[in-house]
Image (cartoon, rainbow, N blue to C red):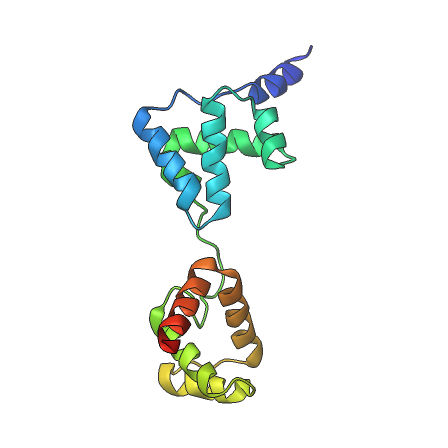
Length: 165
């Protein structure tokens, strides 16, 4: 076996250093409750490694084709702790409407209650109240994000239940 093959093989036999009890608790909680699925998978990979699973087994379990990705997660954990498992900030323009901003949620919800058919009226209301210029496509993307973000959908459903009573 050549040097490259030995290093390549060794990197997939790698395990993380033994986790402390506090680290295990933190990773288990994050793996169960964090809103970001990629972060939850990274936490699970560390927990699986701590229980003795090899990188190849973890990759198969998580359906990850590139095993060096998991090795990189281990390096990030060892170098930066739990913060190393989080996604780096993405580049690009900030959203005009934010699904985490209750002011935006309440306004769009209130405007949609008044006018469900004509999005131009909703856009005009957003422009008037938030001083944000947007297209129908932007509003559609925001509404789609609302539908796929479980926390936000729960928020909207709870509001509707409270309103109906």
